[in-house]
Length: 120
Image (tube, rainbow, N blue to C red; front, side, top):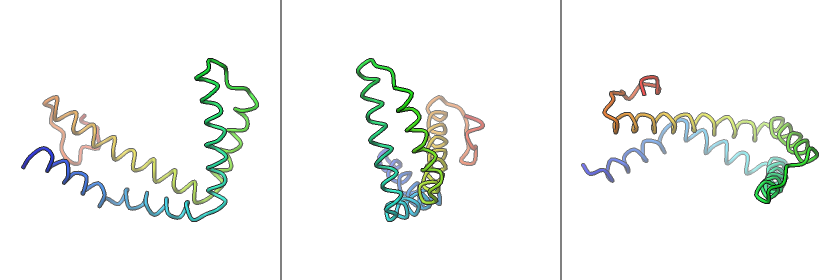
């Protein structure tokens, strides 16, 4: 089996994982929630404003920081956004573990499929 075939197989396994399924379900629920979409759009707008300031060598104003914190609090209060963020974090951990297992294999270390990244 070639490297690309194994990569395809890994991709398929990831898509079939519970974590990916939960992420997609949470994403769909969040996208269907108008309030969630408004909060996310507001956050992205403020976040871009902060990034632009930083790119221009300017500090992010305290007012903008407070606005971002307020929006983040709203995000945590919205059940769909909260569930999506939790699912995203869970899936991110899976991907991090996959990357650690691959790195360990490249470096010649043994790391079994159930290592949980502890051996990596």
